[in-house]
Length: 367
Image 1 (cartoon, rainbow, N blue to C red):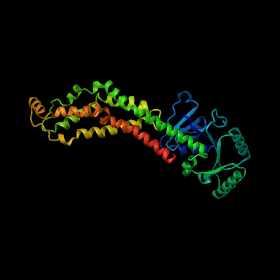
Image 2 (cartoon, helix red, strand yellow):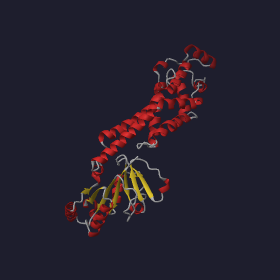
Image 3 (tube, one colour):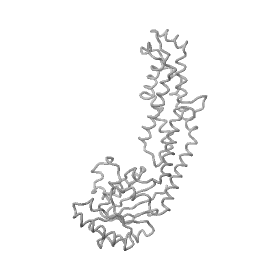
């Protein structure tokens, strides 16, 4: 997928800009200290970047503050050449003292080097660095610098942390907005195509993991125990069933479901965050599972006997154990062998629909 790159050059305040882009508390102060950042090429994206071959030279950061399909790159100090400058915007940071002769020469050199790129100079508001100069004098210098740069035809913007989103989006130039929109549409189409194969993938999953979804397993949940007498049978069955699938050996079913269907299909999506997706899936499964176990029609089935023989007679008369088998089987496999009616299938389908909806929101909002 083609990324829009923003190369950030200039004064050391650019590393404060990097920290401003990150979500608070995600990275340690030591890790994002300027001295550490200076020694690496730093890349900030909305999507997770996996590139173990470049870990020594690069630091990779994730942040939801970054627009989709965008890399904000902070080259090492004194590095002005970048190997791939396609789809690039240049940002140059300038702080007090503004527009020195050497800075103007450096800016001119960068503009010539990246002549086809969009570019902009960010002037650091003296309010954000007040210890270095008198505020009034600083503001006057800021106004003068902006006037000087614009007189030379250089686009100059006053940088403040509170307007980061405005600075990053929309990017100047209709072509970039259209490119990102096209990428989002392509991403949405990819997920929609994968969703079309979901019924078959789920059906195969049920077959492969059938040993965990068999009536011989279900019967363990309805066997006679000391907890059965004078309790709602469904409540006891449900407790046994929940312990197996959420705490016991049956956990493998949901873990495999996540890995083999959701992760396998969505791991390349720019919205992918493994832990978030997994937690959301398990939360939804738990809610749907509990709805089945709390079947109000089953509350009347209370076993009032004491012995296993009496319990067996109770089951033969009420068929409550068979009804439970059917409900659990339906949860995993659906009605009449139609997996798309299975509550568990609908949870998985809901994950895909949620991703499609979120991408649609980005397309709609342009962000």
